[in-house]
Image (cartoon, rainbow, N blue to C red):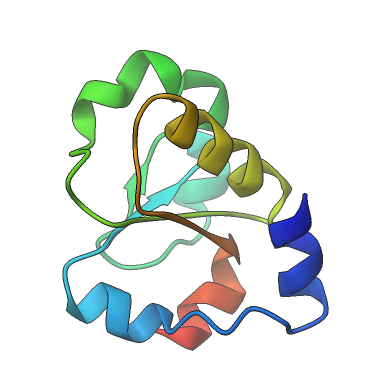
Length: 102
């Protein structure tokens, strides 16, 4: 929730473009139909309600940036990942906004 508030008020100073250049994986946690309507190039779509059963698709050693429509589901996804041992996870917020930052 705090990440979503930071993103909302422009307080997030994370350099997402640099993270992507360094190999970060973008995980879009919206539904399949939302993802089909537009998404960040090379992002992976794993809906947040399916994330825990698809953890094997993600490398714990990689930086992961979560995104969704507004930042709420991506905040939940960040928590799920961190609770499962993923150390370097960032909530990128809404996918369209994140796309503009990278």
